Length: 233
Image (cartoon, rainbow, N blue to C red; front, side):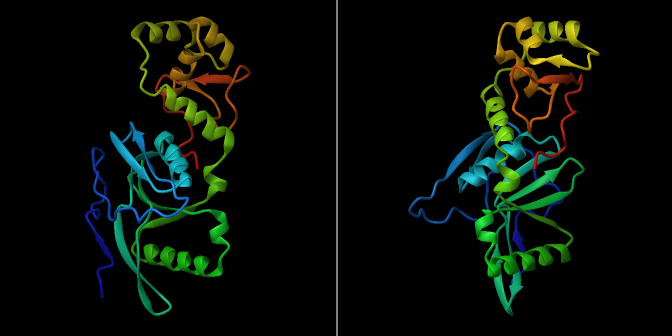
């Protein structure tokens, strides 16, 4: 009988730096499959994804303040289904801000309609629960909230452009303590929409990212940059 968890990942908290090793390499390319890499600032390395739905999930992990770290295909484990031992590799392992671990499977809702798939994931869930591990399946319903993804993609465009000290000073002088600031007020002050998005990126302008961000958006402010929801999924 194989070990329940065959991995290099049994430490309580994975390294936050350039941890690149995966439990398995991607399966062979099949017709119509799409794979790629996501440049994660949070993890300081490229994150591999094996479907467009996985890629979109990575946006949520990258920008969720409640996710301290994440990695793809963290380890192999073995569970029992219909009397047989089966192997399973989670798509992602998240380290949450409270230091708990959350294992993630990314799966299209269409595939979850299959009774056998439902039973398989019930067994996987029970297996992880028995070992004190949290497991969750994310589908396009949680992942592809259109306005949210559009906003995160826009934030990604300006992720590598830090605010200058002068911009920070002007922002503090004009808006500290304000409960309501419009997108256009900030745009006019700085002369560009780009700076507005840079301020959003750094958490200095707070809004509901699940609603389209634009000229009519009203922000609140946060000096600490930690006022977004813990999770975006």
